[in-house]
Length: 234
Image 1 (spheres, rainbow, N blue to C red):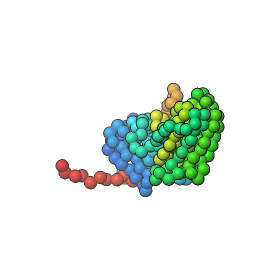
Image 2 (cartoon, helix red, strand yellow):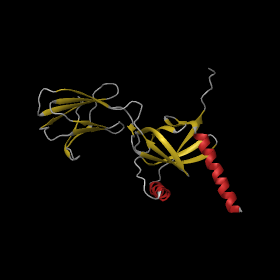
Image 3 (cartoon, rainbow, N blue to C red):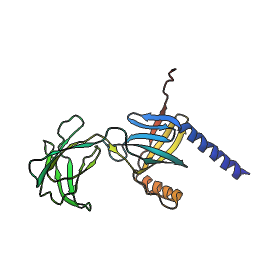
Image 4 (cartoon, rainbow, N blue to C red):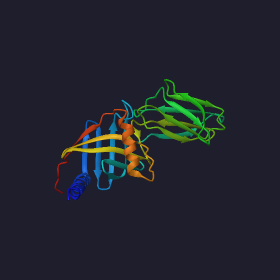
């Protein structure tokens, strides 16, 4: 009898938490997790790096104390590239600017082959520019810097590239796993377990194994409070 009561209680708590999150927004400073029916949008700092914010959106499901977010294409600002005509066919320029259009120095630009092999790596100078010569075998450029949304650009001979990097690490088309605990009616606790989770045959066991591995690193959970949006009569 006690076993059935325990199972019933667990089910009620699970359903209550699920219902609570159908339309809810939780925040703490710049960190946020917003549920809107079957979608969720998140922006969380401090897990990937001290100055890095990871953001994304997509569908979700909750399995016990795990929140699985299947991220889709991000609808917010993302890094972008403008392709312009070059002056020399066997070399090209990659110029990188930030959100304010000022040149970004110390940005890593890698030239890659069709197979993804790195053919050359350059770091932008104070003018935000990296030059590449002998570009016949280059298939794409990847542009990345800590705290910015990385971008990959397909290469075409005779073209130059003007890349605008946006702040934040945007996660798309991956499964994000968050450890999720309810502290009280107003507060949840989050721990990022993976930003690129690969589902196996035994999902429950894989999630437990993942959490055990991550908690060995003694990462601090983040507590977010529910935010109430005032009702406006239409």
